[in-house]
Image (cartoon, rainbow, N blue to C red; front, side, top):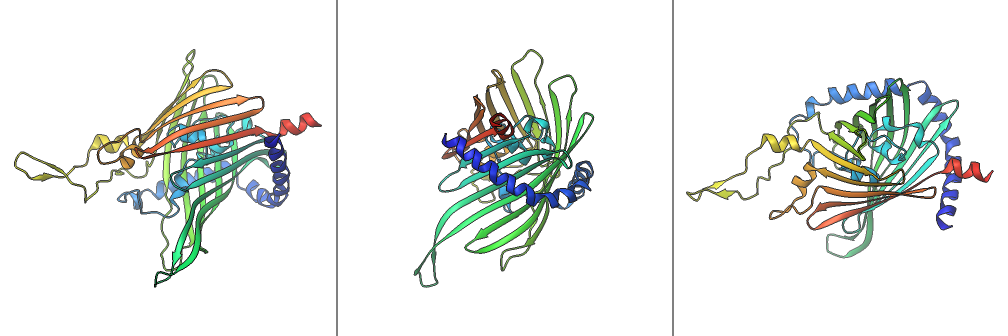
Length: 380
């Protein structure tokens, strides 16, 4: 009853927000998702060259945009642009995944990272006769509270650090292809100081008409930092071009996914210049060298979902980039691995994922979703 009451409250809030969104939707109607997606893909290609020589870590602003928004995305290796189903949080992975199965569904997601870092996400999809199908997504990341001190070491109390995005997605289907686009406002706040950015995602999904096969392409985090933090310069957003496919072989209860990411940048292998190398027979230190195979593997995530019926799925994912960058010096543990389950109970769908960040910690993802349209139609 508590969960039902919460969903009823959320529905009323969303209905109020829809009225405020109508003006925006009229504007979006003039720009089809197909054109916006094509423009975004073009920007991703054009923006690839300036980033070709950059490393991934520490070179961009708003890095939280790369975090998985829901339990399903986290279970599939953290990156997937082709898993097409009824989970509204997959809009954060690829806006072209917006489809009729999501209509009327509200998803609430929560993840507890290490220490006091927590992330909450809400996504809702609705279909209008006049303006088409839209998705609304909000994600909020809190780093907790920190102690503040003056130059003399006197305590000034505590301050909070948080980041969040608010976005609207639209999609357009033409035959076997679906084009999607998302516009988002990203805000980062530290002790009252704020930084704002406009962010856009664009994508396209191909769905085979007879077999369970989908392929997707997405250009994520294209945009501009409107206002940096005081005393800092504007920085680039974490652009990521992703290409992937999902297939379920006939008569086989497993759905496989393979996703290639950071296609706009070949070299994503980081070598710590301060790391100690191995000693050769003469006692000389030999630093680690770049490896073609390791760099290639860092561009891929792989996952599989065991389909045990419409109401139960078991998922496992592997992210080689995460495993290599978050391992400890003496062990990798299960870093880069994720395990998840999807369970449908009555009209509710529960997704849970355990994702290992490194040998010293892991994160727990919870996503609860329900179709609100069927709830209110049944009550009427």
